[in-house]
Structures are given as structure tokens and as C-alpha cells.
Length: 323
Image (tube, rainbow, N blue to C red; front, side, top):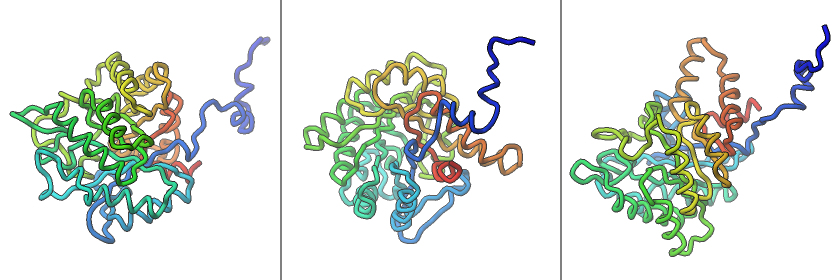
């Protein structure tokens, strides 16, 4: 049998397969989300996220040192606010002595070169569990944006390298950029959650921070998962308003969106491999239905292959060890 082309030649053995691999993962690709709690020597495993923890600041600092020693260069901080500090204004979010602000300073002191990104949204601080201020049952946009600007400037003052607005309010990237510039924080970057969808896969994350909405859902600000063009529109607007990095969230069910965003913009694209995606692999592996290690690398590779330059993932440490 004569064939002009034999594609299998490039799959013959491990050596040639590695030489022609199109997509590779490295520790430089990962952003590690960290959940921080008040107290000392506190470590709580998140029930719906096996082997992932919410830690007090002292233990978080040790974790950051471990991450740096593994070659991971970026973390994304989330904090658990005490219920008694929550209200409808979210004012604890810009408390200069708040847990987020103290965490940024302490981590920068301990590991100065680690790139610190910080979550910017009101849901951890809201008595309603929503990403914005509530009036007459509605999440209001413009007043929320004003609060997000205060929050972002506060994070920059504490030493954050990037703020990461995850709220999906209209116009918040431009307002935050203006607020940072006017406050003199011209080197603070913005990683915008530009295409953040209203997804059922966020459940375990809300367990981690006790931030589930107290009423209704988040569909008036997070995107309809059936929409594709809307993601491009939102992302292009964020870039125009000053975003340095744009994000698609979730990742696995939105690989097509990652690719289209990558093709549409000229800034780095990140993807968030979210808590529900983590939990599914963990649960299936526990049942013996899949090989966990292979599933981790295959799914993360799919996100990078789709166009993600950066991947926020709870599997980062596992992936680096496997790589």
C-alpha cells in the first residue's frame, strides 16, 4: 500500500511526540487562588473541594513560600469576612486594616517577588451575598462601581500588583483605572473578569467563602451561558477601558469562548478553572472512574490549547508536581 502522507510517523515514539508537541504547560502558566480566614494556625478543608483549604494568614504565608519554591509566580487572594462585618455597603472591603489589606502586606513582606492579584467584588462583604449594593431587590450598578473603586485603591495601597474585578458591573474597569491613576497607582494592573458566566459550577467556591446569594441569583450581572457574541463585546469593552489581562470564567464548558476571546484581543487571556470543575475531577477519581493525574493535565492543557495564556486553578500544585 502506497501512501503519500503517513501522519502516524510523528506519533511513533515518545521522543518524536515530545518534539512536535504544540501545547505545553509550565509553572509560569498558573495563578493559584488562596482562601484566607481570620485567626492563627487555622486550616479548614473545604468539604466540596477535597484537599483544598481555607487558612489563616500565618499558614497562608507558608503556603505562598511553598508555591514560590515550586516555581509558581502568581496568587489570587480571596478572604472570608466575618458575618458581623458584613452589610449592604461592603465598607469592610476597603478597611485599611481589613483581612485582605493585612494579607497583601504580610505576603509581600514574606515573598516580595510573588505577584499578588486580589479579588474585587462585594459578595464576601455583603449581607446579601451579592456582588453589588442592593436597593429594592435590585443590584445597583453605579453605586457598586464607586465601592469597587474604593476597594481597588485600598488593595493597591496595601501593595497588590493586580486587582481582579469579578463583579461584572458595567463600566467598572474604566472607573477603577481612573481611580488608580488619580491615586498615583500607575503600576497597578487590572485583570478583568470580562466574560464571567452565570454558572452552576461555582457552588464549592461559595462554600469556601460563605458567599452564596441570600436571594435570587446573579443572572442580572453575570452572563447568559448561551451567549457567545456578548463575551466578545464585554471583553473588547474592558480592553478599551484599560484592562491589562482579560479572563473567561468558567473554563471547561467555555473553551470556545476562550479561543474567540484570544482571537479578538491583543492582551493576555486568562481562564479560571473553577471550583466545580475541580470537584468533578476529585469526585470521579475518588470513585475510581478516571485517573486523576491524567485528567488534571489533560483538562489544563485543553485550556491552554484553547488560547489561555494564564490559568487560575486549584490544581496548580498538583500540576507542577506532575509536570
